[in-house]
Length: 281
Image 1 (cartoon, one colour):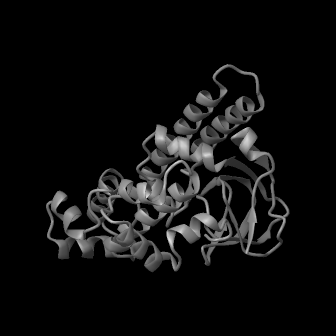
Image 2 (tube, rainbow, N blue to C red):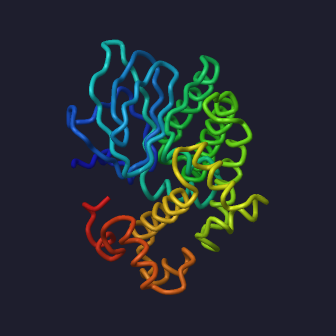
């Protein structure tokens, strides 16, 4: 599988690209960057993590690193702006800001905006483009962090409005799942047990598990593991100043052997193999 790296992305930190198309036509690819696609016009037919998606005008697709994408076809009037963020910049965004909706982008990356909402997102995009191009501007890096923070907060707000209108699950179920995501971001290193989160939500583990399954199609244990593995992969690749044992402790594992078994069971390879081989995803 091909991996796309935006040229000079590490030097730029953030780049805004217009009508960028993957060089691997109709082939599966991944990216080591975070990419926010804002559909300005037209239609794009694609696969995201093996699932079919249809991108239309005013849609926003947030693609976190290492997800599998495949562009199948686009209309002649298709226009897209892409905000690409380097792995290091994304790590700083996650450290500097709190975005509880990040975990949801892993399984639900697509948001459909109104004309007014998309116009607001595009105005911010143009500001990000301008600041990114000004290499000598004082505190450029910090300004970009704040601008991306505002953009992600705005998208989260628009997503919450959309989520409130979902009809396939009850608003109560989705509220519980949202609270679970908040708790997971804050307490993932304390416990990987379903009962821990059920207790904080004042629910029985059985009822809590059913609510999460109904809301997402996956169990609470699945989402706990997903979050831990995503964090582990990020740290193994970006925190080269830390040993694997130090990362294991930061993730809440008391023994390196326990962490290695947990990681290998979920991914098929050891933490060391993942860190040493850039081809692994």
